[in-house]
Length: 293
Image (cartoon, rainbow, N blue to C red; front, side, top):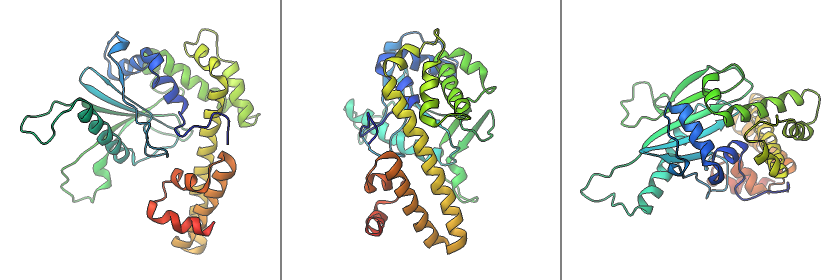
């Protein structure tokens, strides 16, 4: 298992912006995205979900500022289902919010809740608009008159995109520099070396430099895991498409899933159950796949 592996593994984005130690960076990101000008980091209450052990059921960064609940996600792959995922995250955080404050959701008094602000920061390599809004209603039948709507703001933070936000938030600009530097390094280096070189080559004046350097081994491991997970998931998608064409949908999906499980177990050191969780395989199907392995 990779060094530093934990039940809940931070992504680099979470490590930087979801840290109690650096709530000033979280506040800076919030100000840049919302256009606010708060200056007291102690007003930030981190509420990130860390209890659930597999991808898709924890969120990257969530926090309270004033009367708003912000849920921030970093994505290197465009995911049209973020409204559904954000709805699930928000429900968990609201439930915790109500319980911790001993609020009676069954009472006759209207509860006052922080307003949700749902944001995805996209830094994948495929083309994407500078900004877009995803809606849960896009998943419903076209003639549905739904009673629930969820809107997610997707902000592209790749080079040349949303420079105003990056200039307003130095840690975000520096984070995107690290990601882009790793991509450049990977043109001639293996991924582990590319990551280490990017960390070493950070300019001296970067705010996040000393923090990442102090946790260099952990940062390297979490980035390596991110890249390995992304490659395993892409393999899963490609094998699913290819096997689905050749063998029929059901058999193709099974073959692709088993291949992806084997790849994840090999690359990430996960056991079979953990790999199936990572792939978001429904619990009802996991016993069947485990029996095939």
